[in-house]
Length: 575
Image 1 (cartoon, rainbow, N blue to C red):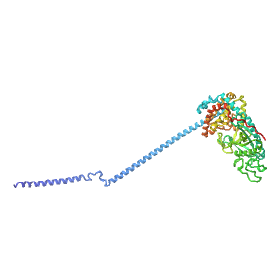
Image 2 (cartoon, rainbow, N blue to C red):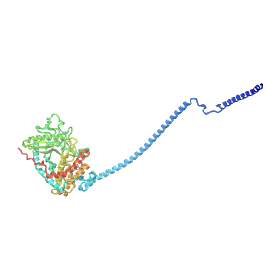
Image 3 (tube, rainbow, N blue to C red):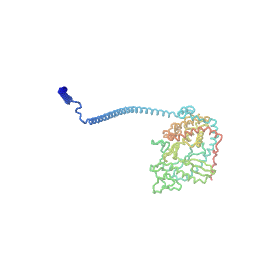
Image 4 (cartoon, rainbow, N blue to C red):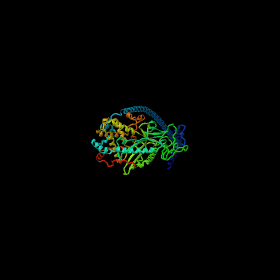
């Protein structure tokens, strides 16, 4: 039993030695570990990173963002500069191209203008050539404008037209001579009474009347028959009239073509003044410069009132409206002197026609006529006529000092001279009468348009100057009528109908047309159609409607003469 304790005591020194060795090993391990991990022996890269690492990272990110924004701005600036440079280069390129194109355009414009002038000169030189037949050559010319001539509308044949003319127009106008004699006799008496009431020293002098227009050219067809008479008047000494035509002024507007003004001057060049105070005037006397409401100032009295002058206010040009008022007053006083001699009344007619008068018989019938005061233009057969400011295809005067230049006497002379060269019984006037008849009937159906009898006569004058005498034989009435309508159709489609005398150097020298008018720029009578589309459209529609109705009208009137073609009223009985 004593042996076990001995073993335990022998193991105790061994345990202590092992424990000491383990402790020493641990100490050595710690020392080795410390040495290995010492920073001076093995320095690490992040050994100097401060404790605020997150703040530094945030600042670096902000700086990076700023750098990116600056880079974007620089890129945009570079792009803008590149775009501006490219635009500048493109602008320079376009400018160079435009300069080259402008130079080429100027060259072509010059060449086109030269070509146009050559064509215009050639046309002027050959416009007196023979006018082609309407059914042939004109068809191709009109094809681009309005199709076939007259839109294929048929006109009455030769036999129908001949029967119509003999039974309707010739018989209805047979009393034209008696009408002219009646009116001329009465106007002679009226003007003589007017002269007897005028003072030769202070009032205007009325010359003998001149018959113009259709009644004196033998183609009047409209009922009632209408006589148109010009009454030229001249001022007393020391006054004088000096007409100034539109073609003598380079600044005259297109709308004033065919008009003129009348300047009133004194023979010695002094300013205008009234000479009423130099002589005693009766209560029925009319002064040159004063209207009916102004009296003469006695010598040494007050000055003249410009509102009472026959001249326009604050000018020396004759006022057409003032002259018409003066003329109406003079006619009224003249009629009062002779009214006891006649068994009818005299009244003013249409208000829109200057000088329109109407004889009223006790039976209810009436006879109109036009008595117009006119001024002769420089010792020629041109006359300046007062015009009211109304719409018309020939234009409107811009002011009351604009007077229309009338070629009525020259037109009558040309027709008379041409008729002498045509075959006996020529159809030129018959053609114009039928066209005028159809136009008047159509105007009653659809109302007046921009086409008038004056345009018909102008077209006929152009055809007469182009056609030979043999083309106007009586048996060619249907062909010439169709040609007249074809000429009008082409003029309407082109909106161009030149005045026959103005600018027409082909007018015969025997007419003695003033050279200033012959060399003037041609006047387009259809110019209003260019400016007024509504008027043009209605005129063209009415023209074709007239052609469409022509066969029916001619057929009906050939066998039934209207009852309004009454005979002339009995001659007046002087008491």
